[in-house]
Image (tube, rainbow, N blue to C red; front, top):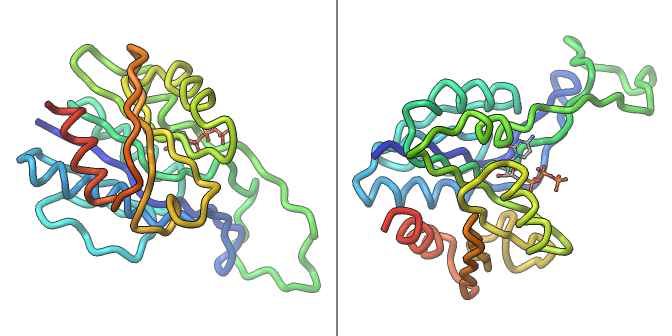
Amino acid sequence: MNCLISAGPTREWIDPVRFLSNPSSGKMGYALARAAVDRGMQVTLVSGPTALKAPAGAEVLFVETAREMQEAMSQRFAKADLIIMSAAVSDHRPETRSKQKQKKEQMRMTLDLVANPDILMELGKQKKNGQTLVGFAAETENLLPNARRKLREKNLDWIVANDVSEKDRGFQSDFNKISLLSKEQNEMDFEYQEKNSLARKIMDILCP
Ligand code: CTP
């Protein structure tokens, strides 16, 4: 079984010393990659910049921007049986990326942004029979309704609903509390626990 996982944040450069990003550590995606390797799957991990050690036994492709992540994911998508998009993709990027460091006195105080591709939405459109597509929903309010909407709109089979408003879980933490929702309207709520242990339980459900 071939498993393709994205993890970590993306970086959207303003100039050579500045970027837009988010606090994703990549821990959940890396834990999922390790859990998939442990189950004997062929694993490709497409990773944004993180401080984590590459999971042994997985092929790891490092990317920085959302567009690089999209290219890496779509190149490998057709061959994958299970695709998990756990990366925290920056929704926007600066309209221009300056080649030179911008001097502070000369910088405009307004940043012009353009939309990045929605990688998962595009993968959802290409999904074929036999492929299982899984997304994450990072929310600070209306967790389950927002997660269900993303599950439907992005043509997913499963979504991990992730409340990122609490300090003791989610971004950066080794722990998380999540719910796993399926397109058949099943909902599984998991206790607060280590991401490593959650990753194994998620894999048990995705690949029984
Ligand atoms: N995602 C993606 N490409 C983007 C944005 C998000 O592939 N440009 C994926 C994420 O990896 C995640 C899912 O879509 O699996 C939901 O991401 P999330 O940040 O929760 O939501 P958004 O779709 O970005 O919507 P919003 O920011 O309005 O909540």
